[in-house]
Length: 386
Image (cartoon, rainbow, N blue to C red):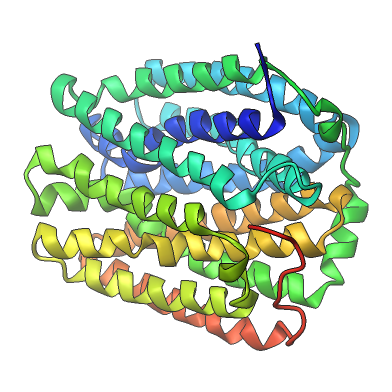
């Protein structure tokens, strides 16, 4: 079987986010079921995120300097599957930390790798980023529902097997032959790419905003499923959690040039403001209706910010530097920033869930301070579609 590059990338997003749904939405629930405290959960997740910071900022760009995007795309999913297997044998907190760090070094490479493949192909007109990335959101929705139902029917212990199985599926998909394969023969520029990016003031501003807004999701990602179980009946939890990727799917599906005309600054500002509103709502959610409303705002808090950053990389960063740019985003916005704030949330949640979420709202608002660094003329898109 041979797929077009657009179809291949879409299926890769779909299968990867099946596994990401298990790991992102339910991992805190699985850890709590295994008897780990909130503080231990926060520490384990934070260390895994710290490992992600090193992996995607250093290991991924270094690999891409010597190995093409296509070859990495075929090899890395198999390594990830092998790294997930030790979770089956976790006993005690020290072993949990060791396995979490190992998995955190390998698994997150798929984040910037998939994004780099998509932006390189989009820049060459072979796919539309928004609709293609929407398949990732669809995968997250399916994964969220399946993992929720499996957990309810068989217990949280099944989540580890679900993670390993979904990683294996992504690995199998990676070996499918594709047309336009030469497009992914790109090798990264390594350290030279970082040097160029660090001289781009607008890129640094975009990165700082993404770090704060995406990092503010830390309390939700680590403890959202637990919070949902506190205020809703168990059968409703998967449906509440799936509202977030559903709203994200709608936004990415509708991402076209008329949406891009809002510009990077407007999209980043929307992301920061909506994130702050979302965390305030979630902090005081006393029933499933308010929780559901906060979930719908995920399109504004996460997806708008992600799309704005991706637009900048696609339109303004040379192809050979895009692995470095995506590595920094995954490292700092989805890694270090979230690691620090996950640790903070894990401590604050002992005081109260409201305290942790209100702190996340303040972090999101702080992102607005970097908007003036993106000058007019730098905040408009030059590509044909998102």
